[in-house]
Image 1: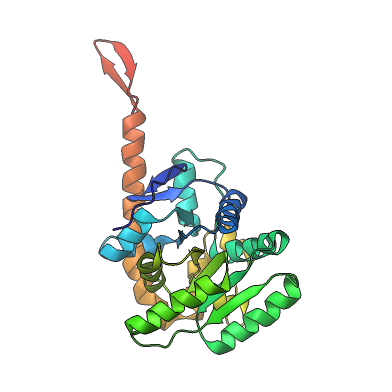
Image 2 (image 1 turned 90 degrees about the vertical axis):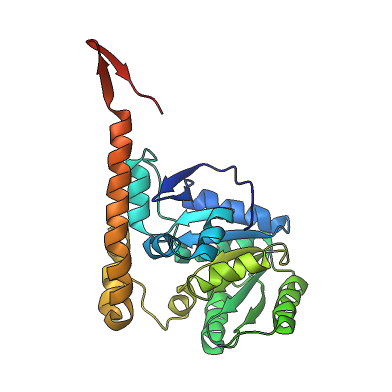
Length: 271
């Protein structure tokens, strides 16, 4: 298990510490770390990731050791707000990617893209060159869909470090990308950000849910409509238990804040 001595404001959501900073603040942290050439782990968390971590020890280690755990899904944001962080906004993978690319362009920081297919990576680089013409893409890599040899793994680390990239965006899917970041922590001198399905969406090969859908926490329904066979089982196994655990946590928090009456004198329980 990795340790990072995280000293940032956070809120526990169903047992996982989620960073309670705004999108712009979290992006600025990533950029600052990138300028310093630091190796960091950023997990972009949603309901699926939190529920998966309850029975996947390696994913749990990644979330506990990550330097940032961002609230990607609106359900996480709602729970955080209900627990007192009223200003919390959504810190989603696509928003991180676009804002970080803009800031990297301004600061002269290069990025590395690893994951997905060669076609998607090519389309991403083409779009990036139009939206962020001064941004340097230090390298792209589409790993083969098989177990890599130790030599191949070492070569990947070498390529990323040699590229000088300050930010490395990882699109291998959950929990593979989180495990990959844990395995390469202290080896790769770059801020690693697991962005899941951001690559194919940014490349234009998958549709992005409308903003009003995302803001109202209905992106899961939109994605289910688009890919029912692939996502039905996942959502059936993750959404109900998350709702149960979140409500249980909120109820427990409410009970802790209720006043206690002893001998007709009112005492407020502070925890």
